Length: 336
Image (cartoon, rainbow, N blue to C red):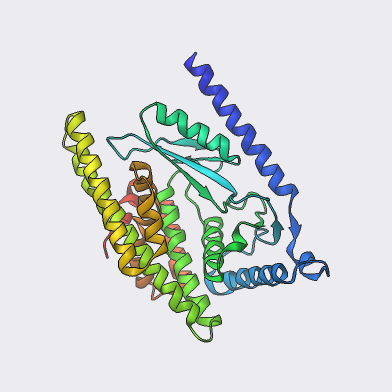
């Protein structure tokens, strides 16, 4: 019975994934055609022309692929592209994993429908897991389809839009199936290098660069606080506490984290930190932070060893990708 239910749930997920992807592809329009059409909104045309400029910069300055992706536009008529569900036990950071034909096994399940995502979250929570649902304004098929620019992405400012394109095109250049921490930290590193170089080249007054650097500092502070909480809780989980003591330790640490974020939000007048201070945080949030950030320092050190020469950096990363998983994990633990 359990196996049958699991199989049905898997088939249901693939059904919504296929229909969602087909709907997205059916909505695509070629950006070059939209820019030339007289009935296209001028602001939309301007933003889409910017996308093409960013793609050209990605290829010429960052060594990223000139693929079919982000040459089309699609209006999804909703606020998010997908909703990612993450589930983690309350006494560890070993996230539930799902396996996919292209990306390998990952610690998230994506849904094109918000209600389905929250339904899955409720089901997983009923098993006693810490669960979070993360709306994703965009997502990537890693180059298997010609991914379009989405209406949800165009609400971003120029720097964030450029960062997303650099990030996802990096995945198209190299993605290690099943090793999300390695793949994401690599893409985050290229993303940040790319935005900095792009703004230095295009932002004459450096106002956008200064604003982006301020937001990067806020994000770094957020990550530091989340990772510190994760490290403290990992020690508690390893201590073998009984359930009442463990629950008390969790509650105290998450309350302290919320208070720290709230104080930092006030001190820096940061909307980012204020939003996180209002979230009822759990292990699922801390797992996702580690997935995207924990190995970035190692890649930044590698980039420095290459004197920020992008071809050298990509070559060194490709060598690591060809190594075994433990070698990559050891690399991610580098501090300098």
